[in-house]
Image 1 (cartoon, rainbow, N blue to C red):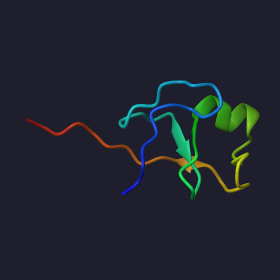
Image 2 (image 1 turned 135 degrees about the horizontal axis):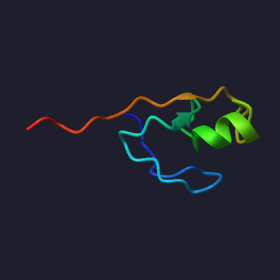
Image 3 (image 1 turned 120 degrees about the horizontal axis):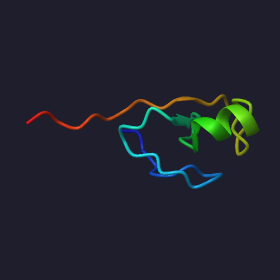
Length: 62
């Protein structure tokens, strides 16, 4: 199961499990959409891997 880290590793923006703004690499390094596109240009600074939109975990319907 993916570890859904709660914040961007660069700017500390909150990225809850249902966030559409979260991006990850294959090692689950986590960044927000702004850092991914503007600063990192889609490349993980830790492993040089591609940053892709992280799958969301939506709240369970009750």
